[in-house]
Image 1 (cartoon, rainbow, N blue to C red):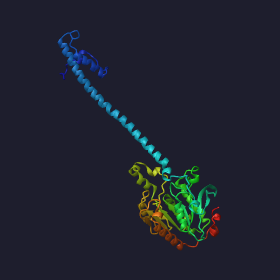
Image 2: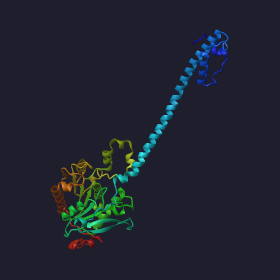
Image 3: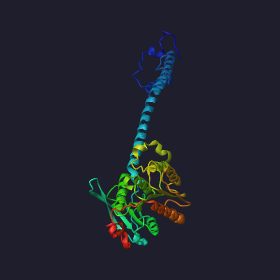
Image 4: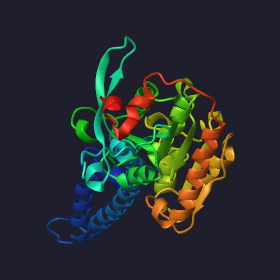
Length: 388
């Protein structure tokens, strides 16, 4: 309802001031005015009509004011809820990052304490060994546990066996047994934080590399370097590749990697997909095992073995490493084999490939003097002088 310019509205004519009242109270009052027609309240019908007209105007005005107030309050309320929602998202994101960084050692390395068996129970003579780990000042700071599984021939090659995650020297001994049956000496070790040292120390990528090098130097002190082969299975393959690019490995005979991967980052992307794209993985990932960036630096002969039905590490990762490597021997892809059973599923193919590789490397090896007394170490099938 509109009024001519200069004319007082009914509300102005009454002299009522409503700004100090809440809109819902004024509305209630006006509702009463609209419904009231008793003479005791209103002296004549004209006043009644005027009051009702005033009520109509006020109700319309209050409606407009309430709508304006709601429009002003709604953005403020929505902004408040949005800030809370964003805060929750940020906290969840930080929580995921912290969880990722804090649990990666357990998820990637999966250290294990269990040692379910030993070589003797599988029909092999062996000696338990303690391999000293020294600091820069040649001080022994720790000892690595291992099994030394010898053969009788003093000319036999020596395999340094580097196991993967979720394993110990007493697990997956079928690999050790197979090499032993080929007529080779085998030294299998546990990294710090695995097996007997499970509760004593937290493993890490850097420590594992140090442990592998300590084991290699231990063997080089007792055997000719050109008889030593570095073998790694799964994660141990990444350790073998890292060890192969070290200067102290340059005179060893060769490298054998089985069922290994390109990098932990690619393995994580394969497992978790696009979820990792939302995280700053390069900043969070401490255990990288990036073999793909190192493989072209390996100058030793290297043999790749993989099962084409491996559900844990895709065979394509070995194909990628093989394509990027320099000194490769024809790769060995076992049809129908999984992550752990290449040697049993493709028994003949596996044996022929790996034996031919070892023999080819030994035939090309240059004469090398052992740092210890290798012949005495393996004479008469005894390993005690080589391991104690």
